[in-house]
Length: 115
Image: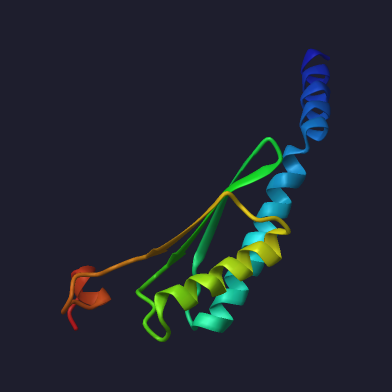
């Protein structure tokens, strides 16, 4: 009986602070940003977010490789537009990151596989 009461209190607490909806909405928004940027950039990023007290603090957009098709400032505006449109609010900070592999190596070489 005590466990049931504790679970009920926890469920009411989570519902009251809107934590569950923030997580599910944030996940849905990040998936939409990934889809938009995959279409415009030709590579799928990973999008993370940080909310504090109902305010969107930071969105991190990480790409698997350097984007070289357009100037970086123009590409950054594309990322900013996708984030602010999909998250429905402008975050305090948007971080754009690119994974850089050592030059002259391929993914299979990094994994130790024969090419």
